[in-house]
Image (cartoon, rainbow, N blue to C red; front, side, top):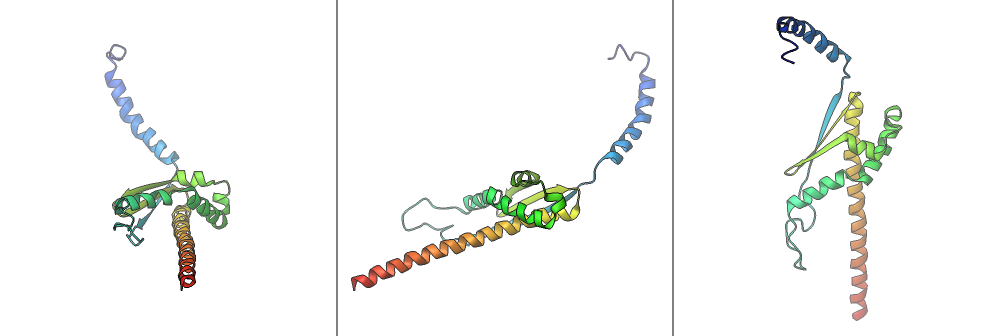
Length: 169
């Protein structure tokens, strides 16, 4: 390259000075504008036995592992499936062909201490925000459903135990 440019360095430098800004401006103007949206989920240790030892001498559950589990749950297929259905109803033109896997791939999920951050980009600002809102709503709805199911199981177990104790008397 040095041998090929011998005696032509000045012409190459002038060409680079002239063409650099022109090509840079063309690249900037031909680019697509993307809007970025970010959502933060804060995790609290409100689940039973998160920070305490259970009666059966099981391994102590730590808050850090709980937050890791919540991060995985937030990115799970059931959450993305429900969010995709919600987006298809809200934005049929933008989310018509979106699969739960596409939605999960378009959202970056990171965990820092007790915060889970979700970040996404889209050409439509409203759609970028709505994607994260749909995922957060699906996450909270599935959590509520799981808690209701767990409460029903606990209630049934307690009622069965109560019947056993009544039968003893």
